[in-house]
Image (cartoon, rainbow, N blue to C red; front, side):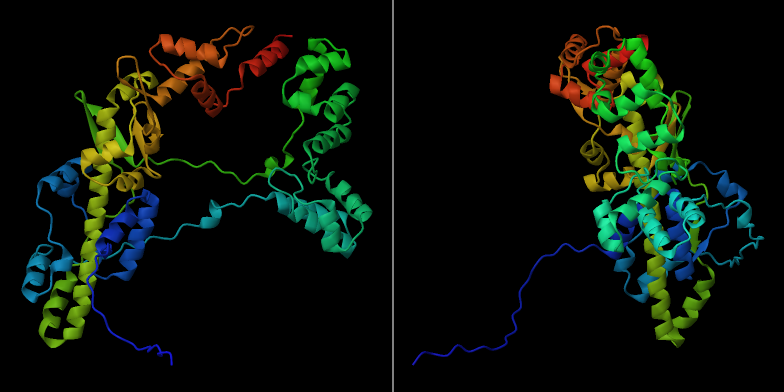
Length: 486
């Protein structure tokens, strides 16, 4: 008889190692990638949740006590505060708490200001779909037609093209293809003209018809030779239509006057203004780095709770524990803010020291830089530097740049020196701008010129950088030059 397996529960104890992020470290990591505007939101949220925090009222003496970079340097020279996590007994807690207070009590009040009238400066632009639906309500009075029109409009993308097939619309709406096409033809006459088209060819032909452009050759190029035009094969177009280059240019200019993306007229893209997080100035041949803290409140521990804590120590243990928890969180937050500013300052200082020649003389003097190089220099992990440079901008005498701009690959020169890939791209762009329009430089020829300048890169690398610069190949540039000079 086979033995039965016994299933029973047992307790086993074993020791394992796990990497667990402390709350203070998690908070510091969370604050690093934030911009000033995002940081203000986090601070406001923390102020509303933690009564231990308040906005510090700065005096004239405090404001005149040096810039933020000097304060950060001074903090680095002083001994760090003890970790709040290690404060357990009442004696240590009182000692740690006293560092934030004196014997004087200073009340804090918020100045009440009249709320601005937001309707005076907040506006909402009309979207493409709102504009089309408004026209559809004025055009279609039958409920079924109106529903089909709304479905078509709802499937138009930002460029103005219909993203679903007519068969899909017919199946979804239960209408015939002929009825759907009639409605779509009316929509194509809406403003902007050509909206709801399926192809580029359809958009251009619709605009030619609507604006009554009497150019049969331009219409023929759009209907039959649009692929040749997209590839800039002007000589083939001229040969097929028996035209001179000058005649072909006239008709192609007519086509260029049309709008290939009519929906972009109502694009919701807005201009975003950059507020630099770091400002670099030069004083007495030395570069000074200042962290922009415009609008960011300076925090401190609320002094009012010193008395509450003292009273709660004997009378109410639960209240005392609550205050201890809140003050620990407040201290974690203050330390995280200081650590954030200190890390950003160190990263910015290293970048400025590395790129002094670029700031003074321009792109030809920029040096390659990697996250690992900065991380090793300031003693942090590479991911920390990555969080610092995210969404941050620095203002120099050379202009305003994202911090990510300075991180790029390096190429080796003939004498072992490191050369920035940005410098190579800049040189390729300059060479092509000054090339002979009748004999544009090929990628091989560009590579040969760079090699003579101690910038040796492969032809495929030249082609990759040229594509990143949105520069077409030499044969396409030659065709465009011919067309412009005809």
